[in-house]
Length: 118
Image 1 (cartoon, rainbow, N blue to C red):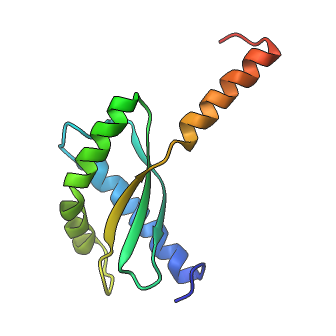
Image 2 (tube, rainbow, N blue to C red):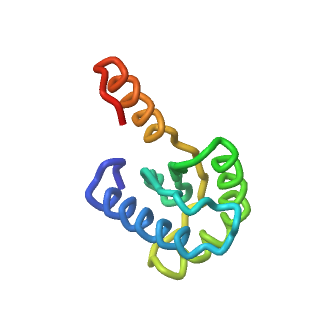
Protein backbone atom coordinates (compact mmCIF):
# COMPACT_ATOMS: atom_id res chain seq x y z
CA UNK A 1 0.00 0.00 0.00
CA UNK A 2 1.40 3.41 -0.98
CA UNK A 3 1.54 6.38 1.38
CA UNK A 4 -1.21 8.52 -0.18
CA UNK A 5 -3.27 5.80 -1.79
CA UNK A 6 -7.05 5.85 -1.52
CA UNK A 7 -6.89 2.88 0.85
CA UNK A 8 -4.36 4.60 3.15
CA UNK A 9 -6.42 7.82 3.24
CA UNK A 10 -9.56 5.82 4.06
CA UNK A 11 -7.78 3.95 6.87
CA UNK A 12 -6.45 7.26 8.29
CA UNK A 13 -9.97 8.72 8.27
CA UNK A 14 -11.51 5.65 9.93
CA UNK A 15 -8.82 5.51 12.63
CA UNK A 16 -9.24 9.25 13.27
CA UNK A 17 -13.02 8.94 13.55
CA UNK A 18 -12.87 5.97 15.92
CA UNK A 19 -10.11 7.46 18.09
CA UNK A 20 -12.10 10.70 18.40
CA UNK A 21 -15.07 8.68 19.61
CA UNK A 22 -12.92 6.67 22.05
CA UNK A 23 -11.40 9.86 23.51
CA UNK A 24 -14.85 11.43 23.83
CA UNK A 25 -16.07 8.34 25.74
CA UNK A 26 -12.94 8.28 27.93
CA UNK A 27 -13.49 8.53 31.67
CA UNK A 28 -9.90 9.54 32.49
CA UNK A 29 -10.06 12.87 34.38
CA UNK A 30 -6.61 13.84 33.05
CA UNK A 31 -7.90 14.04 29.47
CA UNK A 32 -9.18 17.58 28.91
CA UNK A 33 -12.75 17.88 27.54
CA UNK A 34 -11.54 20.14 24.69
CA UNK A 35 -9.20 17.54 23.22
CA UNK A 36 -9.39 16.97 19.50
CA UNK A 37 -7.50 14.91 16.98
CA UNK A 38 -6.00 17.11 14.28
CA UNK A 39 -4.76 14.35 12.01
CA UNK A 40 -3.73 10.71 12.00
CA UNK A 41 -0.88 9.14 10.06
CA UNK A 42 -1.06 5.34 9.87
CA UNK A 43 2.04 3.69 8.44
CA UNK A 44 1.56 1.78 5.22
CA UNK A 45 2.34 -1.53 6.96
CA UNK A 46 -0.31 -0.75 9.64
CA UNK A 47 2.24 -1.24 12.44
CA UNK A 48 2.39 2.31 13.81
CA UNK A 49 0.12 5.34 13.95
CA UNK A 50 1.04 8.92 14.78
CA UNK A 51 -1.92 10.74 16.32
CA UNK A 52 -1.64 14.53 16.36
CA UNK A 53 -3.71 15.88 19.25
CA UNK A 54 -4.71 19.46 20.06
CA UNK A 55 -5.90 20.61 23.49
CA UNK A 56 -7.63 23.94 23.87
CA UNK A 57 -6.39 24.96 27.30
CA UNK A 58 -3.32 25.77 29.35
CA UNK A 59 0.09 24.12 29.16
CA UNK A 60 -0.81 22.21 32.33
CA UNK A 61 -3.97 20.88 30.63
CA UNK A 62 -1.88 19.76 27.65
CA UNK A 63 0.63 17.98 29.89
CA UNK A 64 -2.08 16.19 31.89
CA UNK A 65 -3.87 15.19 28.68
CA UNK A 66 -0.63 13.85 27.22
CA UNK A 67 -0.09 11.75 30.37
CA UNK A 68 -3.69 10.49 30.27
CA UNK A 69 -3.44 9.53 26.59
CA UNK A 70 -0.08 7.83 27.16
CA UNK A 71 -1.51 5.69 29.95
CA UNK A 72 -4.59 4.83 27.86
CA UNK A 73 -2.66 3.77 24.71
CA UNK A 74 -3.22 0.07 25.32
CA UNK A 75 -6.93 0.50 26.00
CA UNK A 76 -7.38 2.67 22.90
CA UNK A 77 -5.49 0.21 20.73
CA UNK A 78 -7.69 -2.64 21.99
CA UNK A 79 -10.83 -0.58 21.33
CA UNK A 80 -9.60 0.17 17.81
CA UNK A 81 -9.07 -3.55 17.23
CA UNK A 82 -12.68 -4.23 18.26
CA UNK A 83 -14.14 -1.41 16.16
CA UNK A 84 -12.05 -1.70 12.99
CA UNK A 85 -11.36 -4.78 10.94
CA UNK A 86 -7.69 -4.27 10.08
CA UNK A 87 -5.02 -6.85 9.43
CA UNK A 88 -2.88 -5.24 12.15
CA UNK A 89 -3.96 -2.78 14.82
CA UNK A 90 -1.36 -0.01 14.79
CA UNK A 91 0.66 0.97 17.82
CA UNK A 92 -0.43 4.48 18.82
CA UNK A 93 1.94 7.40 19.40
CA UNK A 94 0.33 10.63 20.58
CA UNK A 95 1.98 13.90 19.51
CA UNK A 96 0.78 17.26 20.85
CA UNK A 97 -0.05 19.69 18.04
CA UNK A 98 -0.18 23.39 18.89
CA UNK A 99 -1.08 24.65 15.41
CA UNK A 100 -4.62 25.69 16.45
CA UNK A 101 -3.32 27.69 19.43
CA UNK A 102 -0.59 29.20 17.23
CA UNK A 103 -3.19 30.24 14.66
CA UNK A 104 -5.38 31.83 17.35
CA UNK A 105 -2.38 33.75 18.70
CA UNK A 106 -1.49 34.92 15.20
CA UNK A 107 -5.08 36.10 14.63
CA UNK A 108 -4.90 38.10 17.89
CA UNK A 109 -1.68 39.76 16.73
CA UNK A 110 -3.17 40.58 13.33
CA UNK A 111 -6.23 42.07 15.04
CA UNK A 112 -3.97 44.15 17.32
CA UNK A 113 -2.07 45.50 14.31
CA UNK A 114 -5.34 46.33 12.54
CA UNK A 115 -6.78 47.95 15.70
CA UNK A 116 -9.68 45.49 16.10
CA UNK A 117 -10.90 44.84 19.66
CA UNK A 118 -12.67 41.65 20.80
